[in-house]
Length: 242
Image 1 (cartoon, rainbow, N blue to C red):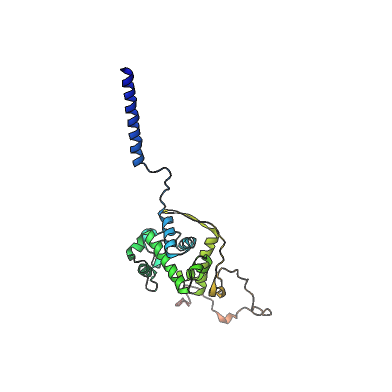
Image 2 (cartoon, helix red, strand yellow):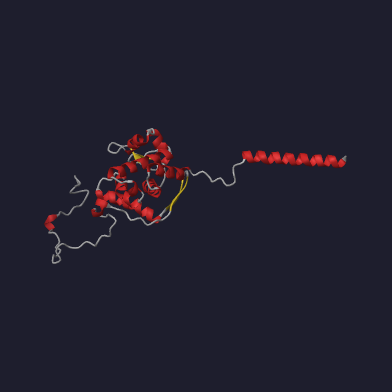
């Protein structure tokens, strides 16, 4: 009789342990589950949706804001989010992104995923206007002019400087801890197709030391009659600045 009771006790213990394991397996996350990385996922998703090179999209965002959304507050030029979607009297990329993605403007200002999608949609729109087909869109170097236009530069020289900065980031890689996860871009060799910007002066180019226009020229001090000795503030008060 004692042995029967022992066997029954063991069966009860084994059954209870099995139920406990089953319950724990239901409520415990899988050991192999990867941690959520919302911003990295947003870049990957938007790049796939709009057929924009993912690494180029990240490099552009890093050049704009270092992936800092400033908690939805605008920049000095009225730019919002990690993609710096702008809304000011002369530039309306925020509103354009809202039209392209059908997302509300307020959402684009504060939601990282929506903001990244808006930036990707804008970049793709520039590519479409430039006539980039599916094959060209797979080559990050072909996006150079689209990137230059994304920056809304005030001159071709600044537009080239902006695009060169983005491609320099591609060359050196990006590895940054953003508020919503870590975003990385491996260093890669990309040859930018500058198109018309190839003939635009490069503001990063080394400058030669200034040279005189006429080597035989001699410097001669101005005559004393060209100026008046002053004893300010008692004489010759300054009344204008040119």
